Image (cartoon, rainbow, N blue to C red; front, side, top):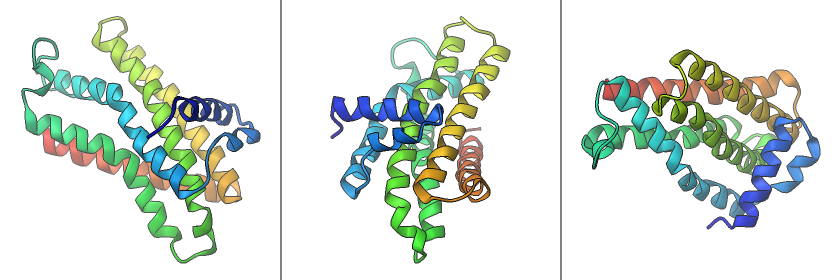
Length: 196
């Protein structure tokens, strides 16, 4: 399980990486146990999952309020939940497949710890615009703008963390981040195809 201290350090580390501070990397663990704890932290993103499910239901014209409204379509809820969890795991699996058997494989675990925490912390930021939209506090256009801005910050942190953990140049780091982004977008399209 993730302690409050580790969550706090990881949040500070993520904020530091968004600010491009190399010393922020020291706030994260680098071993397999740290990776398991980071993966277990995906469970903390349940509020972001609820927002995603509500947005998906709203886009389909389904109710988002009322007793049991979010779970009245079990297939939709299961598809969105599966997509949510897979969005954390698929980019990790894709890069593991790329680096296995190479000298870079030894740096995979530290990278996976850091980028998983960035994704966990980023999920809260990315859920905020959607939550405001669901409460009719922001327009769809402003929500999209905020989502793009937060996505850019998360990708910047992923890029900087990738450069630091793998010790690679901007081209390779950008390629790794792009690989994860494409895997995530492909997964999102698959989920939308299943629920649409």
